[in-house]
Length: 186
Image 1 (cartoon, one colour):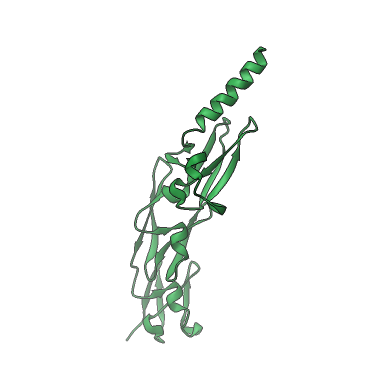
Image 2 (image 1 turned 135 degrees about the vertical axis):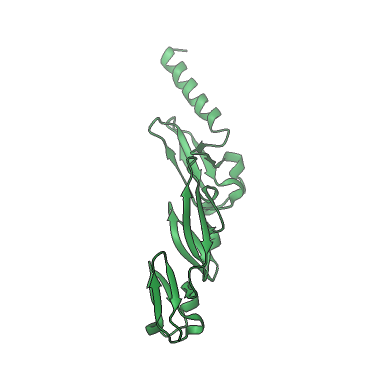
């Protein structure tokens, strides 16, 4: 075997050995190949290596379709399960598709939401690439889908999120800093 052929085989072998384990970056991991066997549709993607071979990547246990993958500038493959990168009381990914949730942030297209009338607050980013988002009450207004049946002349808006008085009451709204909203009741 010639030296260039030997080097090529060694590189392909190293890539295959590397991808036999979770492909990781920034403290998060995706499942690889057989770990993705039960995943379907958007829950699994193919990552083609420089060698031409490919591996299947997914969030562990197929728990979310929100992950990103590719290659670092060094050529090393990576995969981030965005679902696993978000902690705190806020909901994320597919959890935001149920009624009564309002999306406040996105991480690589993955929605981060809270049940109405709570507001999502980005607490901090961690050095390992994870994020903490919490849900909290900010005033006495209803938010998001709670306002969908109200007369729209009594509905306000804070950063793209509808706000209104509880029970669609026809009082003015006091909108304040930090997504704060209170109903201007007498």
